[in-house]
Image (cartoon, rainbow, N blue to C red; front, side, top):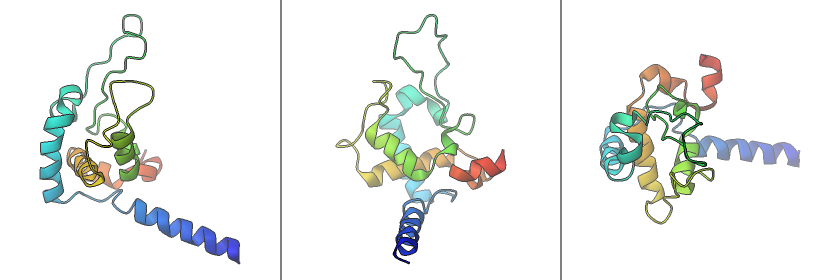
Length: 137
C-alpha cells in the first residue's frame, strides 16, 4: 500500500510539472517570450525559430552544433515544456553554443520563452507535444 501511494504522489507531481505540455500558450506569455527570444535566442535560432543550416561534419569544428530549428520542422515539440525550460536554464553539455541561462533568466522567463516557441507550432503539433508525439507519428 505504501508503495502504491508513493507512485501515486510521484504521478501527480509529474502531472503538475508538465501540466502545460500539449496546451496552447497564453497570448501574454507569448508576447513576453517573443521579447526575450529577440534578446537571447534570435542570433542563433533565427527569426521565428528557423534555426541554422547544418554544417557538414567534414568541415565543422569539433563540438560545433548548428542551432536547431525551434519551429515545428525539427523535434523541439517532442519535448515537454519542463524539458524545454530545463534546456534553457541548464544549457547543453555537448556544446558551448547553448550555455546555461540560469542566473540570467528566471524560471518564469524561461516559461515565457517556451510559450513563444510553442506559438510557432500548429495546433496539431501542440496537441502532439511531448510524450504524445509517439501517438501522432
